[in-house]
Amino acid sequence: MIIGILAALTASLIWGIAPAIIRLGVREESSSTSSAIVFNTIRVIVAIPTTLAIMLALREPLVHPVSLIGWIAVFAAGTIGPGIGDVAYIYAIREIGGGRAVTIGYTYILISQFLAVLLLGEEYTLNLMAGSLLAITGIWLVATEAKEKAYSVKGVVASCISATAWGFGSIANKWALEYTTPLSLAVLRMTLLLPILLALSWKSFRSLNRKLVYSSIFTGATSYGIAMPLFLYALNIVGVSVTVLVTALSPVLGRITSRILASEEVTIKGIAGTLITIVGLVIGTMGMG
Image (cartoon, rainbow, N blue to C red; front, side):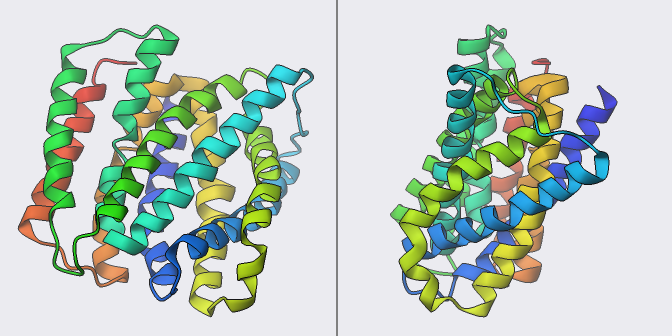
């Protein structure tokens, strides 16, 4: 249990740094949709050898599903979370900033908890209801905080899409782990996702700036190559509820790093929204493990 929580904590810390790095890479691109897809494509390309290197160092074999349903689970785990969710998240970061995108996006924790209750039979509690109300209040505060740039409805919608996709993705990952191991799943789902991303982004590779390439390589190696296997490892050991609870620390660190690295303005309203959201997430997930 302790090892699983530490793994989730390490993943959370890494993911907390990522929004500011992503923001530095995509904010100068003229087409935010194509840059988000290209960005994630490069991340996947980098993540595969990074995770394979970890497996080689640990002498862990690549375990693949032996049934069609297993491959479907792996494919769902790859396309829902890092496919739909992360592309929407990168788009949102460019439109509304890393701090706001990470705060709204990380309400996936409540979605994951709801799906865990619905699909995995976990108990529904008053804590979850109270936490949801607090999180919605915090989301409103952060989403209406607008000083860095004009308010973007598209950015907020993209953040909500990422939250929904990550919520379903956490359940898909848990399902896929019935057929393979955490490290193997990290590699297999990226391998299945890569051809889709390449098909959508190959024309945009001709006009890439260095910041986008560097930031995508860095976050690909860290967020995908290292943090994701840790998250999957924790998911496999301690389950959905406890693992996603620990990742609630990411929005807090994301707020701090977005201010330091990406020069985003943080207001009292934004800070209050972030804190209320985090309190809501914590309350909503208490007693669910």
